[in-house]
Image 1 (spheres, one colour):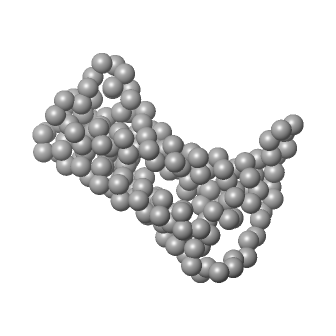
Image 2: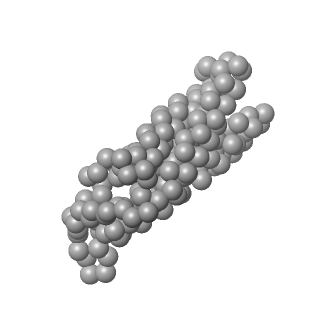
Length: 163
């Protein structure tokens, strides 16, 4: 199956690295940037309370959410970095099944872990505890991020099918 590839060249030249800054002006580039920032916010919330001596006693869903947020933050960072440092990667990778599968798995797992965190904390009446309120906020951020990954899945499906 052949695909036509259109490359938008808006570059910033330094002595060694060519940045495809035009990718960040595309809708998929903005989605990846938002996913990365929301993932970093989730990781920041979870790791802040972990570093300050708190742990996750009796909150196994929080460990799962922490693991998923770190995993997909790193994966999205790698995708975004590869699209920014290569003129053709942004146009080519969206035509592959990899991006479709990656975004679909990320959306499903982030949705599952975020719902689990919100349900666990809602059942236990977490109001008034700063740590658990922050975890609840991270769960809400995870739901927003899952929605963004679902949008990316739809875009990747359209691009893969050539629509």
